[in-house]
Length: 600
Image 1 (cartoon, rainbow, N blue to C red):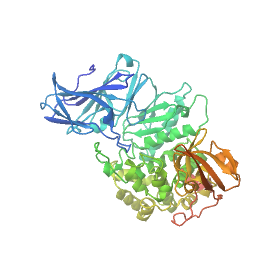
Image 2 (image 1 turned 45 degrees about the vertical axis):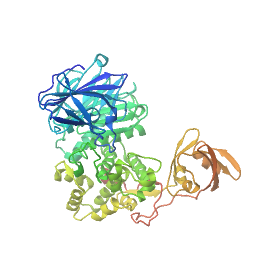
Image 3 (image 1 turned 120 degrees about the vertical axis):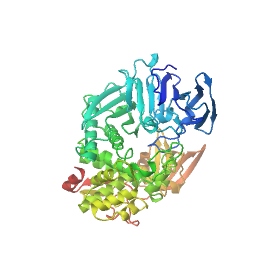
Image 4 (image 1 turned 30 degrees about the vertical axis):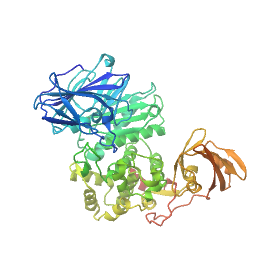
């Protein structure tokens, strides 16, 4: 492997080369200037912000160690740790390759058009030397001569395309700054005096980069002023890395950057002023990950004061760090003027309906969902909606209720709570006790009862009454057919059953996940269906049907009873566990002045 820079004598040094584009292989040389006699190295099993054991070591191969010309014995200790028997204080060099074939934001990718990696996928951790200075040398090859590099790491000596030497204060900083390389579009703007860079890979020729920059600048300025007024952001610069693909969505936050994925059709287009749902969703993603630069990367659970890359890191606070961020991502779009009141209420409605249509909300608290993220949220299956609730969606509704309750009492708001928490915890580790203390300080009363019910129990949230007090009317609506039947399906020439919701007509009929629903029998007449709406078309007003389904090569006739469902206004005090809560709701403006005080 060619060396583009001489390693610093005291720094842990990584040389990374995109060596085999068609083989999807990065080659890495790790130099440890002063190893111990039995130096241990390991590759993380997870990446902060994505709570699943991902076993990154499965992609590592050809690991060898040398001191000068002498090969050093390596012993594998377990699935992700190795030990080198070497001479102390004599430079140890480990060379290895990593297969990079994951298009997500969590791991690494390399092909003939683009490269991307997180340090947790490529950079072995040197046991006992994690707090040392680390340097990363990104090498160019003839095959990547036209490429450029983008990363949040501090450059030491790089060429005009960004290849060369970068530095990090420690291992945590090194692996918290992903690297994008390839032929990408790039643009820049300044928000509240902070330089920002946006790079986009995979965009179509119709992509309107100027509009994306202008809209992102509004988001960033709104977020910085939310946290600091006219004060300074906690980073000197910020980088957005967006990979536009045929179909995809996701993001992962970092201390001064974020990696994003979107469908390329969701990007803004030249000469098109309309803001479609896809572009609004992308702006919400940008807002979400940017807000995380404060809420989870700096203000973070006390459980994450120091990451342990060798095992799961548990916390019950993801409802706050992901849920409250999910509340503010769309709210800041409204405050930035990128969506209007109607569009914002549409987004809130979608979130409320997602939670109401999740039977698991009556089974698991949102605090439990946070703790169980490692085995439930990130390992979803056909029973997930029946057994768990999302700490993103319900957490955002907890934030909504808390904000509206504070505003109704007139002494403070969730905005002030967040800013005061930042100051109290000095932009560092926090606990639920810190939140409760700030709530009591600013509102002149304790909120222990509310958090106990909204976060640590499965009681329904008092959405209707709190929304009405802030100018918004919540009304029950007739559910769509999927919800009426208690199903989540895929439709492609036939109805594929993905999930059967607990307690619904489909479950009572014996329909199961994995079934293919072929047709229905109505009063002795058989009808082929290709989508759920066909059930409504052929059944008409009949409520007693026979579902014809295929399962494991057999055809089954399952009696299906539908109950008549119509819209009705739910009780206002939906916080009572005995209250009737609708499956589907809509929101409308009842008091524009009250709504304006909340949103503006």
